[in-house]
Image 1 (cartoon, rainbow, N blue to C red):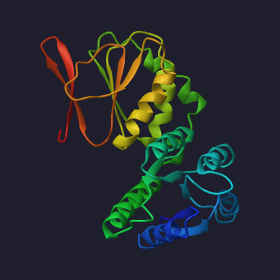
Image 2 (image 1 turned 180 degrees about the horizontal axis):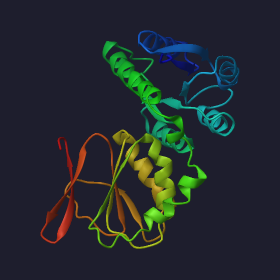
Image 3 (image 1 turned 45 degrees about the vertical axis):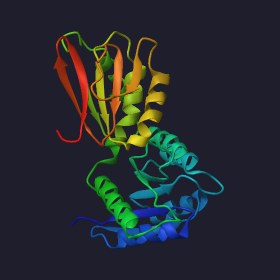
Length: 260
């Protein structure tokens, strides 16, 4: 018999906790086992209730969500879905959370403007994220294991001269691997195109963070429609559009499309 997914909720907003509780309670195959208003309460809740996954707010009193996430991943690794605001600062924090090992993120509904449509969007996204956790092995989303990371540089430096370009599809759990891969590039490469499973608001932050890790000869940028692709360039696209490569004359161009 398949066990229900045990969900823990960590958020300083009673309203958000209530909303998440209601969504989980109405979803077959999962149940809330505990709530906490800050990371210190969360630590005790996790010890007592042993949830399979927690939703974690970013902005909380006494200790912020990022600090707590980092402690969780060191002391008691488990799937964590971040609950964050879709703002520029929230984008940077969310990317850091994914780098620390969070499996995914969800945009928090605005406390000042919660309506039926925003609740519907939030509920659908939350159930989708939790079902993803339920149907996967957390080890696949966790931090890079030694035997995985030792080969990442070899993949980046493989004999790629035979390829006109390289394509990479990356889910939210793949950001940490992208960081390792890009930081270990040691040779000239054809254009690399990456479709990253994140909202468009996060793309520029991701580009900047990956550029900091890239060697001097590599340029990381957001993909733009119809631009000519250059060697030693990495082009990042979000999950809102399809990224297609077309050959025009002797050049390859990136096309961002609404349909495949």
